[in-house]
Image (cartoon, rainbow, N blue to C red; front, side, top):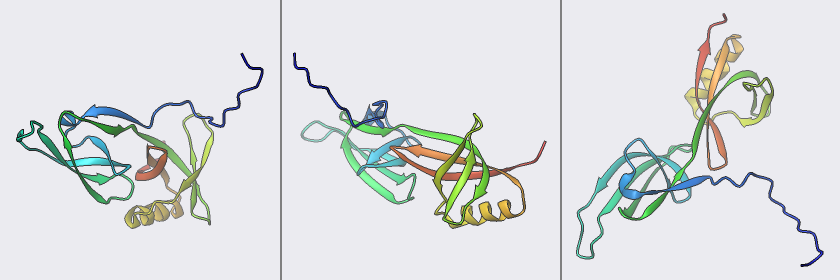
Length: 158
C-alpha cells in the first residue's frame, strides 16, 4: 500500500438530502424534488398505460421555500427524489439590524444564521410581536440544505 495520507474536505455526516420513492406512491400533501427544488405536492393525476406500457404521474407542486408552482410528469414505475423535510420550533431572542434573527434552541444554545422571512405578512407579524415584547416561537422548515421560517406563534408567559 502507499504511505500517502488521504485528506477529505467534506465534513458532513454523509446523509443524503433526498431519498427515492416510486412516483406512483407519492400522494397529495407529500413532498417531491422538481428541478432540484423541494416541493409540496398539491395535485397528482395518473394517466392510463399507453401504447408503450407506462402509466404517467403528473405532479403539480409548490416550492416550500419560494412558493413557486412547478410541474413534472414521471412514469409511475420510476423513482422520484423525495426531500427530507424537518420542522423545528425555536424561541425568538433578537432581530438584528442586518436582517438576521437570533433564536434559542432546545439545548440552550443560540442559532444566529437564519435570515428574516421573505413573506411580508409573517415579517410584519414577527417584528410587531417582537417590538411589543411578546414571547414568540418560530417554526423553521429545513430541506436539502436550506432553512427558512415558515410560521410563528405567540406564547403567553407562564
